[in-house]
Length: 175
Image (cartoon, rainbow, N blue to C red):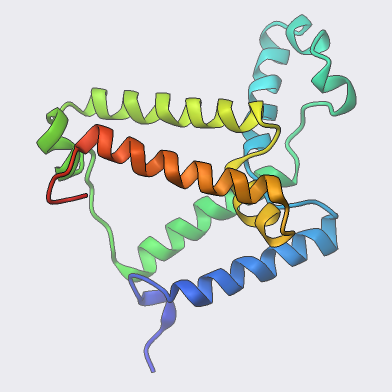
């Protein structure tokens, strides 16, 4: 029997079950849904607090919840370490800064690729926080709780992703 950690991909069904168990564990142990966005929000607040404290002190959001390195950061750390462990154990290591599909459409500029990726992530995070949630919170925890808002979010999120992919890449052989 081969080592499952050395496989380049795992069964999506088994991974889905594992994520469900992790979500149950988060509710049971911390009474909190899985989510990551709050970690970045708190990190930004901690940076502003160190540089210019009035920004955080006058923000009403942080009256109820002071910025901290909380358990959400442990999820971020776990995602990073899990990805690193998976990459190293499977040997699936490629140093691709600009994927071929992007290169075919927009050129080989690493700076452009990283700028668009960072801005896109920022827009997605802003939208998630504006909706008072996050992608993983709605997509995993909210859907598991059968929350109508999370199902609506998931349909909208994936629909927007499909439309964005077609707008960026058109109907090429890759999409």
